[in-house]
Length: 333
Image (cartoon, rainbow, N blue to C red):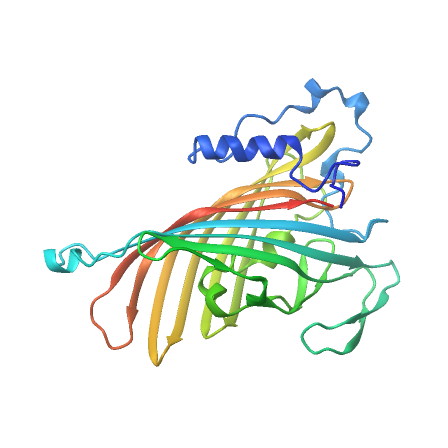
């Protein structure tokens, strides 16, 4: 299977790998200084127009998009300040959850609209859907999913592909998601450790109106709900995007968009008759590198920092929680 850049094997392009290495060296540095200005790269070598004219989702001759999504979260639980020493002795260890998922997506759209058919993984039936003019129908599925959850008490526990099921069924217009009919769902042990609840909106973030230039900002508000494996999640996110400028990686011009988000996550879970409630607030900040050639996100990195509480229904004591860690997305084909 080949990568985004010419005949490279599936893997982040070399510069993306440098992103990852630099992030491991310094977690506080979200955007390492490896982005070269267009002028220094020599504009004569570039085969695409200025990316500011191509910030729109448009059907291209390459309908298949393969994304790899990796997610790492570190979950720390502590009793609230003021609890007794005995309570602090029961402090839970830090849990680390890591996952990697490959999504195969097909984008179909024509100026006059298009009718697509596909075999639904969830209903096991052939489905036909008509897409309005100017819209793109996105269908697909999870081809692989691997995850581990570890802490000092249980060690490392692997999770398998069986914990993810369902199809991707979206409609997008030039600026982003117009309708979400279906998205893969997590079950079993993977449920509490699924990637960002609004993953579809991270894959297809909201784009600005025509005429946006460097330094311009736009805001998008996203509210999503999901009910996976007994876990009900509501996410509300206010996302601010800022067009930072051109970037050249491996002789390809990309558009660098900075992202800052304020997030509230509310979760309720039933476990063996016990009902738990959790409320988290914080940020998800990062960057997007947009491909003017593919008219898709080529790479994105989001760093979460959430704080909140969790408690069993009927219990007065609350546990303080903090969840941190990155989610990365890259277009590998």
